[in-house]
Length: 140
Image (tube, rainbow, N blue to C red):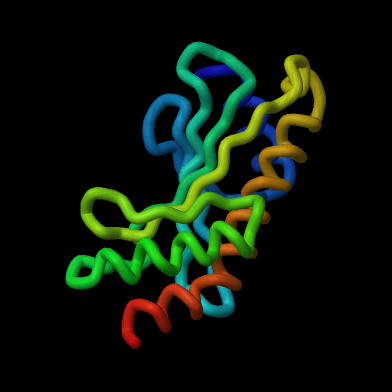
């Protein structure tokens, strides 16, 4: 496993944070939100070992019969929240993601884990906060 992924795993183990390994360099962490029952965030570490990581949550809500409304709400949320990118994928699902660059030597101490937790918490808190707006756009 890539050293940054391993450093994050060690950090989560040390702090009793539950996760599952989906495949090499991909972790899944699930949190409960106030507005969303379950917020599964996938963490993708660079396959070539670069200190780059992506946090992604998909299938937030589907806009299959009204893709334009999905794009509209995502554009609105992109203006409102600077930490997270909202978009509608080819299946008309709302997807959120953020890319992060870790420090070159962050795997040597808890810096990698702390940085990853910062981004993970950002994804969860922003998505949970924005979900009512997404749902309202979908069902309105």
